[in-house]
Amino acid sequence: MSRYGVLVCTLCSALVGFAQPQEIWRWTYGGSDIEKCAQLSKTTRGYLLAGSVSATQSGPSELYAIEIDSAGDMVWAATHQSGTFDAAFAARELPTREFVIAGITRAPDAKYLLRLDSSGVVRDTIPLTMPAAEYRDGSITGSGGLVMSGGTLNHIAVTCTDSIGQLEWSHQYGNEAYLCAWHAVETRDGGWIVPG
Image 1 (cartoon, rainbow, N blue to C red):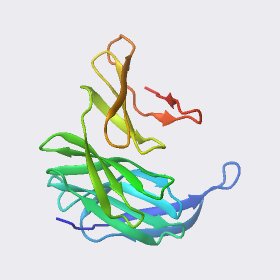
Image 2: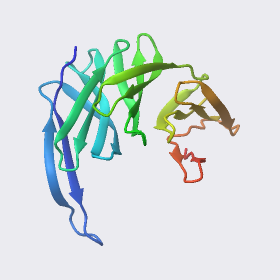
Image 3: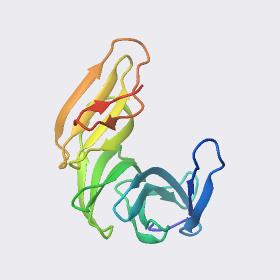
Image 4: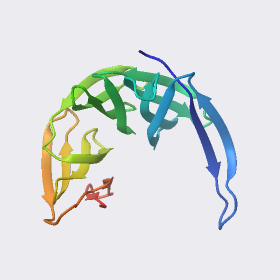
């Protein structure tokens, strides 16, 4: 497929207090397809945007990622497709200037890690095997692994893999109806805060 659609990005700055934000720049990326940005993270050069691109609202999609510099100029763009419906749900630049993007695909149902070099070229696709749960969010760890958060029928579920996709740990918390974690935030001491 490898189509690029339109992704609009606006960077604003707010003054102290309740002042109106001031627009610094506004850029549009891509062409005539449908883009959805699910993740925005800071990089050495600017920002990494990751999500999906599709020619139609309900048609097949590809994982879509772009890096832009601090002025909003595109540095690189990349797409990846493992199945029928692919999308990114977590992304991060590592200290090595590599990028790790967590992707999900439908038909077949699977999750994976993509490792990209500093130019956005995919160097490795790592399949993930996760314990059963309905995962809502993912965060890339400082070492390039993945922490997924979500829930089962009555537990919060949190699972961590290393940078090559191997399961490091998986825990369930609580024992009440309808528990679910919505996000996982890495703390400075290497732990995780998991709101739900």
